[in-house]
Image 1 (tube, rainbow, N blue to C red):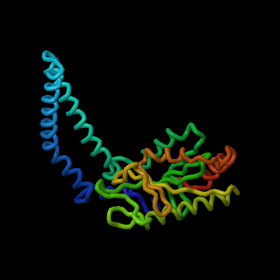
Image 2: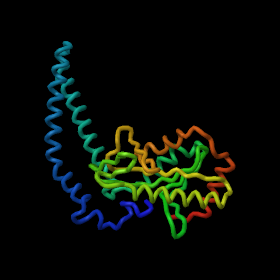
Image 3: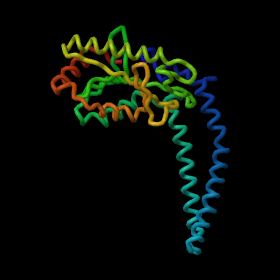
Image 4: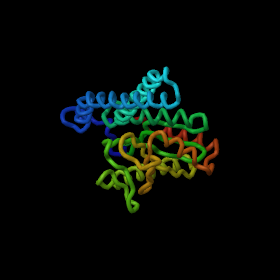
Length: 255
């Protein structure tokens, strides 16, 4: 983020009485309750499995069907619990959002003629996590994470993070895009327009996983490459892509 991302703050952020620390504490203390509920769900699955087997005349196989369905129910319940906790990893400081998004971008876009530059900055000014250059244009992508219950939404054209306005965050990212575009246009003499994106690693996005507000597209990290590939117009030639990528690598400082 232009003002600094949550996962590059000092480690004290995730210790003591921080929200992240309390979240992990309550999660681990609730593990016995989750296991008990998993056993109950597996038991219900066993009964349903036996009943279905008997219903279709599989009397001798009914215990096996019950165990199979009970095991599937327990496995699915365990996976959903694990996925819920894993989804908060960036917010908790256990993983780095820029590493996750960068890997996804390179995997999805690298073979399609796109250049992905990680961790770039204009000296003494703005910085971003990813710069993507390809046939459909140029994008900057930053990473951010909020608490699991924070709703990211657009109301009346304004961006909200829970009950707080997100205008400051959006404005900073839009201004960063403009600064990067100005530098690249000046150095390459190619008119460059940059679209800003914010990859949201933890927080509640609406169905579809995308919010567009105040000039910024906020989305789940896995959707960033999909949105970039969806750009229908080819606005940059291969030569222009190479020129912009080389200029960016030369002029922009690594962070």
